[in-house]
Image 1: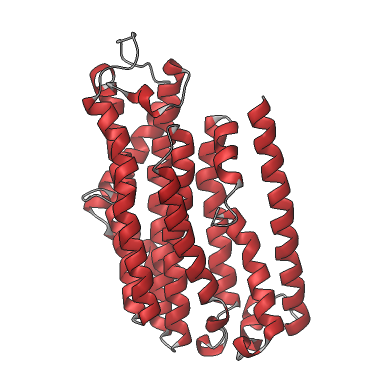
Image 2: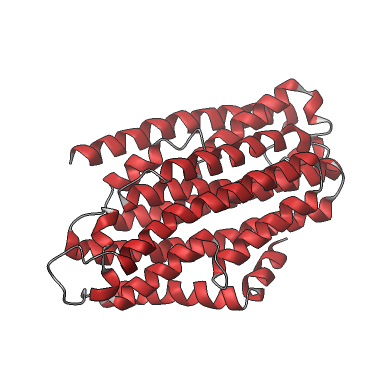
Length: 344
């Protein structure tokens, strides 16, 4: 109960602060443009980087969305909230809340803050560049030290949010140089990554729920020998962990490919620098994802109970559907590629 209360208070306080900053930024945007329509705001943001008030307003507006997607340094609520909340609620927060934040961020950044012919992009892409690099790096490095799988997935979520912010920075860099087609392609990469992330993260948390029904713990060591007692669950969890790490032919590789293509297509030195940061962090992520896989396949059974874990039918359906998406999209990525193209 104590950890749940602490998690709730942190989520509330940080949420109130970030929402207040976001609303203040939006009020400044309204004061500078005289409208709340995104298309009209974009039309009036000519040379936004030369107008300090507008730049500050855009920055403050982005703060609230950075909280929603648990981007560093607005991520402090995520690990404690994920651990303190019931696991089904944690799964919802890790996917639905993040998805909502990114959808809103796409709308406000691409349709509201782009400016005529991308002229306002230089006012916000440096902020998203820093958020992406910091989220990937801190999320992965801290995840390396976690012994609780829920906290590990929380920091993994922070890092994955950083990967999803990379195409935002790519879109801003490309738009500021007048390459609006490249910017649209970068935004479609966000949609693709978000859809893939939802499937593999929901699947991972569904397995966590199933295993915790027996072990009553979220320790990574409790997954020891899972393949010997419940091989089906072990195979599913292996698929989700490998997909989160970006291993082909699972869907995670295509999400990473779309992200890297977006940042490389942007072409500038800043874009290539962010691509290098993303590549290094992709390698770091292998370590903690594969630590879970090693526990399941190569460590002795962590419990005296050796009968297969009984999975409720709704949970089994959720795991099966998530695994189906992860495998099918990895083999036939055009399914989600078309969705991203239609979105932009």
